Image (cartoon, rainbow, N blue to C red; front, top):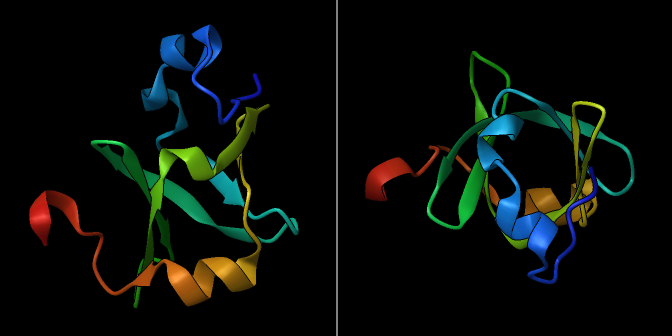
Length: 93
């Protein structure tokens, strides 16, 4: 199932809970972790268990969810430079 940036009926009906624990890839096909959770209009990607890295992303950055894989609209470099965090940021952390 492909997710479109525009708010169409497919996106409104999409169960965002499906992507939790799924692997995440950037637009340049780099594996950057797994979806750790959802909050409001964002999702959190977690990479590694020890010394974990987190990325908090707006849902509009999701390009595609297909065959159990989440693909982002941004490259690994963009992800690291703009969205990398030390904590997941749940509940205002």
